[in-house]
Amino acid sequence: MQGVNSDSVGGFSIRCTPVRSRRAMSIAAISIVSVVLGCERPEREHYQAADRSMPVDVTPADLGIPSTQSQAIGVKVLSGEASPGRFPAAMCVVRVVARTDANGSNRHLRIADFSAHHKVFWNQLFDEQPELREIIFLTPSGLDPRGYDRSAILEAAKLRGAELCIIYARIDSREADAEYIGALWDTRTMKPLLAMRSVGVLPADLAVELTAEKNQDEAPMDPSVREADFRAEQEFRRMVRDAVWDIVEKDMGAGGGEKNPWKGYVPPRDRPWQGLRDLWGG
Image 1 (cartoon, rainbow, N blue to C red):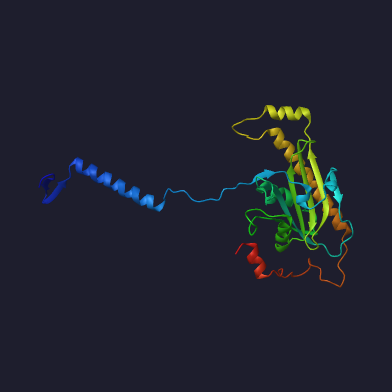
Image 2 (cartoon, rainbow, N blue to C red):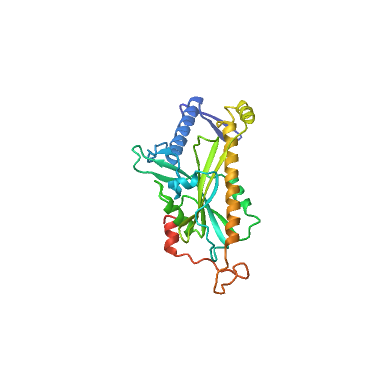
């Protein structure tokens, strides 16, 4: 047969395919594999809506507090009366950013990225405060991906079982190297309890030292900016901790002989199915 060499060894016939034929078969096999892989993982563009909004600075109005109440550094009490049965309670922590469209007509908030070590810091703050039952971190699940306002955040925090909600943000500062503002809300009454402002100012020698250590390949953010940001947020968390302890001390036991929630079995919270479906965007 032409193109095929055949030899007989021990009664068996050995057929040898020429090199040229084997090469053609290899190319064909590679082509088939490429087609199969191409069908399984198609290289095509996927549609994604463009985000045409622009970042803007968060203002006290975004957090629901008057600008005059957030000018002083420290904690400003907005509602200082004693509360009956506010504790034990859970607190929702929400860090936000603000965005707007080109003409500024659609201003809204979005939940900022929240790393794991930030959550650890917040959780550890209240290890010694038994009246604060739980720290809850709000996620964008169930919220409008195009943006939302303070009311939507507070409603989501309430639906998750948080009686308190702290909403805060980092803002540009002309007075310090870093600055944070925030507001503590009661989600049952939907009233702000506290307004807070913290700043971070680095000593001049430390700022120079950290700036000199900047490595473009390893640290895209200036180390001095990162250090100031850490100190300002750390001070903000300390303010929240101390303020919550003060609120706990003013809390009065609920009247009517309610059962102590820390003794015995506590049944799960009654959360309507419709509310949970809305929460998770179902």
